[in-house]
Length: 157
Image (cartoon, rainbow, N blue to C red; front, side, top):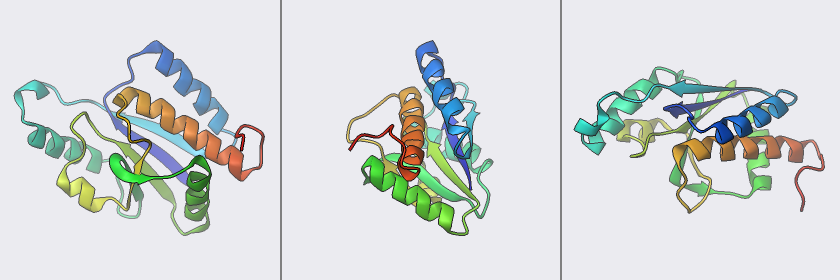
């Protein structure tokens, strides 16, 4: 199964880029994973949050195929432990899903059309994180999930 992380905007902070690169290198041993950064809207400050969400959804839809299993990383999504997340991934790998696409939206969240298209909504925490930090946190959790599935010593429990 291929796993993709779609995100609006770029990661600007070097310390986050370094962490992301570290976990991308680690993930190569477990799965086919890629990050696609979708350019942020230009002149967004002149738009309402609802229009921004609609326009970002239009951009995101260009990267989603009909058969993709789409998971929105959303504060209102289901929370799960790292172990539960590993089970979730294993179920996706055992099913006929060829690609699972995780999506980090923009600062205003997701438009209604994208919320309706999603197969699942996942919350990383009840806390709010910057969209740049979410990328690193998610990739680390993805790596952690694969080490759990392989019975490796990274995850302590």
